[in-house]
Each structure stands twice: as structure tokens, then as C-alpha cells.
Length: 248
Image: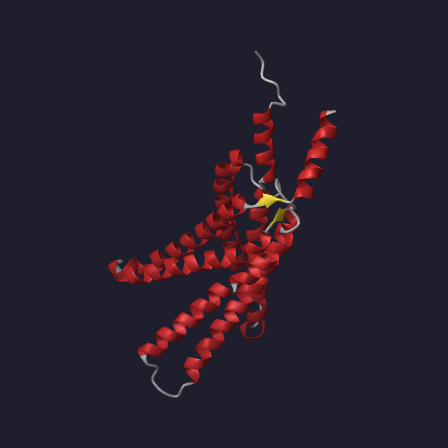
């Protein structure tokens, strides 16, 4: 006997899937693709920004151009990084909005974090005495906290996009800070084992390990967060109406 396509179990299953931004059947594939594209964006964006800075600085006086070239390099990195994520997300929300929000949020967060770290470092250099180990620990802790909190700016910019498609999206404001916290933990853990690495290869191993952990965390944590979000009811209604029109 053929089961009706409008059976209660099928309707309930379809309704449950429709509530989620990322349907349950697509979660694993989405997490893998989003993480891979984030890592790719991190690598390609980094190479592109370094290449741009090197080519421009080679033809301009460094004293006058370094600051603006660095800003331009950061913009190129942010756009490439955000565009790679948007290629995966455009199936579920506006890709160009995500790209603009993530690019702007990354630039704001990065600028604020650097400003705070430089300010905290200036406190140490302004002291006309030998800095004690306790003060070094305190200043390092404050720099890490400022870096973690800067993630809120990235979260706020992305929230402006997510709130159009999901409900209770305000929790996203703090999710990038969670990513930055985990990155700080990984960097701290690597510093504890750096003496176990041969000195000849220590610098490149630590650098690439930090870059690898950072890019993976920036992909995995947001991917998990996106899988927990639910669509707004009006977005579901529009989607259902569109599918009804196409079926009729």
C-alpha cells in the first residue's frame, strides 16, 4: 500500500527541517564545506595580502606608505576570506550581505584588537624600569582579553545579516569571541611545548601550526553555530508559498 505524501509523520518531518537554517540532512556536508572554504579563504587571503603589500612597498617609500599599504592588505584579506564563506552560505542566506558584513566586521575587530594591544604594550615601554615577570603576565593577559572581546564586533556585523533570516540571532554576537578564545588557548598550548621542537625548525612549525589551528577554528565554530539557528517564521512562509506556486 502506497504511503500518502501528506501523512502526519512526513508533514512533521518536513516542518521540523523547514525550521532550521541548515537542514539536518545537510549539516555534515555544510560543516565540512564551510570549514574547508574558511581554511582556503584564510590561506588565499593571506597570500594575496602579503603579495600585494610586498609589490606596493617595493615601489613606494616605506616611511610614508607602510600604514596605508597594511590597511589595503587587510581589506584584500577580509574580502577574500568572507567571499569564500559566502560561497557556501549563499544557499541559505544572502551571500553578498554575508561577505560585506564579515569583511567589515573582521576589519573593525582586527583594528580594535591591534589598537588595544599597542596601547597595552605602550604602558610597558613607558615604564622607566625593568618590567617584572608578574607585570609581563598581567599585560599579556590583558592583551589576550582585548583580542577575545574584539570578536564581538565581528559578531555584531554578522548578526545584522543573520537576524533577517533567523530568530534569536543575538546570541551570535558572542560566538566569534568563543572562536578567538579557543584560538588563544591553542596558541598558549603551543607556547608550552615549543621547547620540545628543534630550534632550527621551531619558528616555521609554530607559525604554521598557529595558522592552521586558527583557520580551522574560525571555520568549525561558526559552522556549528549556523547549524543551531532556526529560520524566522516569515522566511519559512515565503519559502513555503514559493514551493506551493512551483508545484501547482
